[in-house]
Length: 244
View 1: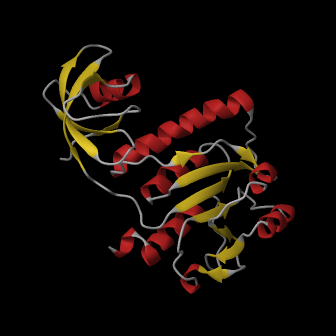
View 2: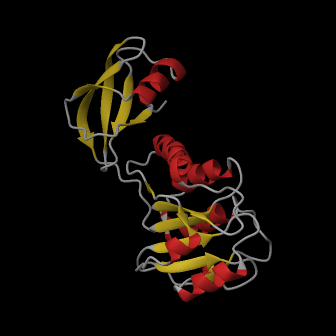
């Protein structure tokens, strides 16, 4: 069985001995029920990973020691940023978790006209902290050693006013060219997906004004939590790691 993987939000090095972050220590001790002498893998998001061994444990502290650094690049050759209109309830957790597994490079949450969830200020900060934990946990599970950037939640109009050099594609049910009809992107791609009910007509007009091209995923209307994952999987099959 593969060793559990733990993200450490500080710079690691070979032969270092240190306590795990509190959340990680709780997970290792209470959820995984590991003991001193057990092996884990730790990574700091800078690329690569370290084998490590648990040295000491008590009720609230788990101390580990790293071995040598090991190169392990599991990033996708297709750099896709997901611009996601906020969906209801915990659907965003699902989208984040699965998009990380599918190789997303970064995520931009958007408050759109048809978003039921409205986030700003302290409430947005709390939700973003939770989402970051979801992203980190997904990296630990799927083997990624670089944590995708989770950008601050923005209002659609504020976000659209920011320039971008990436290719820009917008999921539009029944409209636009299919993925199979497109050339492999030469650089990063921004993929815009609306919330339940899709983008408003005004938002579609704004998106097209700032360079987004409509993209179709076929004749069926996919849910807000299905569409981005289907698009990411298709991109991986056409141009990314599914071809390896």
